[in-house]
Length: 389
Image (tube, rainbow, N blue to C red; front, side, top):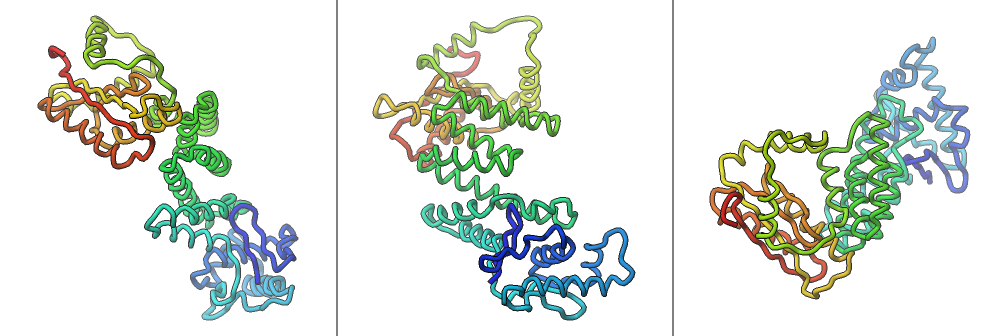
């Protein structure tokens, strides 16, 4: 039975014999093989194969040249006593024989992805995702990535792989398995170094694990990488997410203290600031149409552990989970900042204080549903900006 590896380094084996060992000397023969395996669910017309093999200049008799290459390929595939029926021919078209048994890594990868998607519990999904990620050792037919016909297929499998990695990090996070997230994402960014979401999950896990120096180093590495390759910066969402990971030290505050400090910090006249702060203020102004219709309220969410003194890893995991709940619950234009190691301060637009309070209650309700770590409570406070406090 043939064993076909297409993810990462391409190889075709029959038992202990590697049939594709001399691929450099028979490139067109193996190009046919790759094309038929890639399009294994359909018939491929002779004309399509000819255009694929000789996109610029056809040989004098392209049909005869194609027939010779197909014959040579069939002979190579059956060299170790296997069947010569791997490739079918009918109606002026060729097809990879779907009835001949062969181990194809990308087919197994797709099967595991589908099983993970259909799984009803984390316990069922976990081994499917782990095995799928283990199979994906690199891009589909990576050595042929320059071929135009391969691009959409390669991107399709990339999307599946990234989806598997992100789904698995979520399973690990729910089980507080942050070491596993770090190991997984470290491998994944070797394959997909420009995937911002995976980089973010890696930096998050490093931060929660207390490896702040490593988290900052990874952030700088990714920023430098995309600047060098694309002349771009990480997205605003990515920068905001990562800046929220660096630990916030200091005492816990009362909302009246925060409001007094903010009120006293007001300045008149022209406000000079750095380019990054100017960008953020500009973005906030673009989102502020909705906010200006209503009063603005200062909100405070305080996370209190029932044990009274959680370890740093548990505290960071809980604050990260709370951050996700805030992000998913509040509206565009609301402003949030981590104000101490266990508090978030918020600016909310609402018609009445009870509406602002209801928004924070929704955050707390989602947190109770989704957070499964060390037992803790959330306290919320509201004060109108410009009011008595």
